Amino acid sequence: MATSHKGSQASPHLKSALAELLQAHPAFQTTSFIDDLRKREFSRLDEQGHIYLDYTGGGLYADSQIREHTDMLGYRVFSNPHSTNPTSEATTELIERARSYILDYFNASPHEYVAILTSNATGAIKPVGEAYPFRPGDHYVLTFDNHNSVNGIRDFARPKGAEVTYVPVIPPELRIDEGRMHRYLSQTHFDGNNLLAYLAQSNFSGVRHSLDWIEEAGEFPARWAR
Image (cartoon, rainbow, N blue to C red; front, side, top):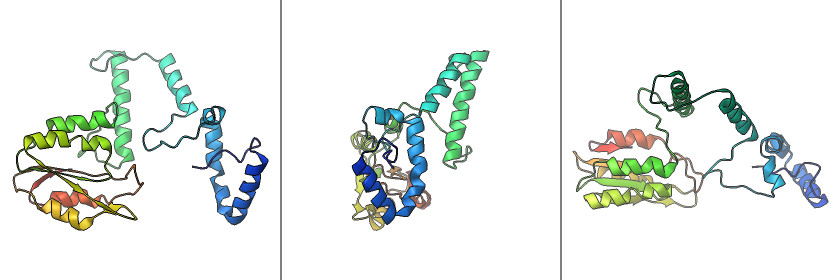
């Protein structure tokens, strides 16, 4: 992410460094809209001297989001969605709209997927591990660069007799070892309850893994959940 040092508050040293950068890489000037966005929506970063890099773990909320959310709460009344009164229906409408936006963002058909809202990644993954019907001889396959919350499913798989297998990623690109993935997916019992976990995009390396593994896992004769 570009920083906000293009403004008038930049030190002479930074201005000189920026001039040299633009001379060597003039296309960098096209990123100025990011600096404008930072100044407009995230001015608190510069005011408090922060350099925030944890966007893969938790994105920052923008100033406009705070204002819009405050306005919504100030002018409307919401209550528990599990009812049919007007305030409950208003809450239900917002929840369903959020689910619809999420599915649209991921190009996921509502006929095939359901968006379940949870507090965080751990809160989303733990119920999967708790409810998944692992049995002796089943397989839980996951990649080395999975989110740490995904590793926690091991504690549900192993006590039920399932085998846990990690698919390595190959440096320097840190992409999935395709040969091993093929082998691990094929080494399963026909009637097993198997689970495959891998990231569409690694929050460790930034690598975007192929989504073809979802379809391929479904083509094996064993029962694979993805």
